[in-house]
Image 1 (cartoon, rainbow, N blue to C red):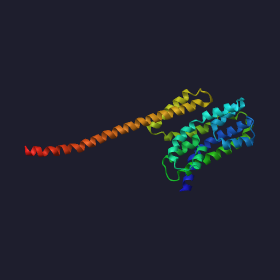
Image 2 (image 1 turned 180 degrees about the vertical axis):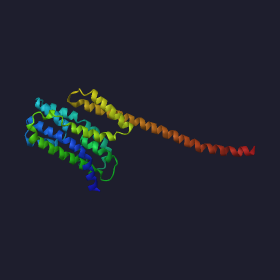
Image 3 (image 1 turned 135 degrees about the vertical axis):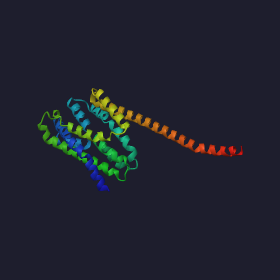
Image 4 (image 1 turned 90 degrees about the vertical axis):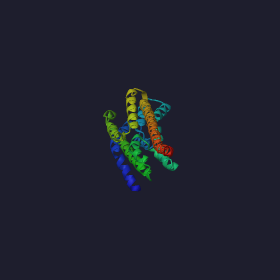
Length: 260
């Protein structure tokens, strides 16, 4: 069972590993251009493991921003992971703290998108599926960053090549099939429209706000669905109650009619 879940986890994350490889390669190359050496760049990818935050931090580092500004900006960018964690928490609360901490460390957009469906099934040992996907993506990220630091720096304009679009395309291919219920559709539409309208905000803040608005819209739709189901169930219960009380009333009238 454990081996099967791990193999399934590796297979689930494989398409996103292919897409993320060039993006991490670019991060490694740009980090060298920003003044890091190969060891620093690799250790950074090893510990931070956050592509968008790394790219923004590199830009701020090159512009001479203070460490406080870099830390605050990357913190805001990664706030969306709070939403991911909240979504996973109810399905992982029975796991010990060290397992949940490990899962939290490797929680990225790609890992969440490729594992949330399986985790929600609440099968025994499902954390092995998650951990396999997480470590598969993490290892791919670190190796690509290392290669980018070693050879990517030979291409001074590599960040302008558009190679990172491969990850976006793979991510879309993973996420779209999961958008089936009307709650997910509403959340996706609101988040997409908000993201486009707020794309001009600095430091990718538009992404964070759009994600929050999408979650809020999906939550409101979920509440509306629950109310509709409750009303339908109440109407059904009333109909069943009337169906059972009517024969009783007729039976009570029958002796009176016979006596008359």
